[in-house]
Image 1 (cartoon, rainbow, N blue to C red):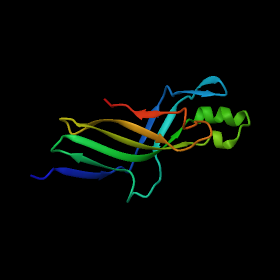
Image 2: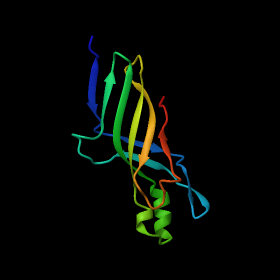
Image 3: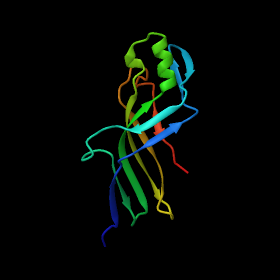
Image 4: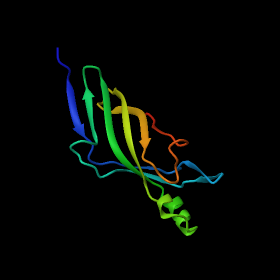
Length: 132
């Protein structure tokens, strides 16, 4: 018996984390201010895709995002720091979770950050937490 699969492409994403995240820089902790998450422009033929497996009732998706923290970036720019420190962070989200009865999903998983001057890969981590 074959699996009931539905493949999809993520074409739009815009989310805001109003409370932001803590950022430690030069030994001091700063509030990032609101964090904005948007879909990064990539080749839609190879990125930003997922699959719904209705046989196992599991969903998986991988998509490229851009994380920006405009208020904190403005503060860094006002301090005259290297502009590379205030640019958006590129990341790849890989998530999976159950398909719910209403056909929604509660995804969680890993978030791999691209190298960024403000967020060293050896001391920075990110994750996708289950939605509601």
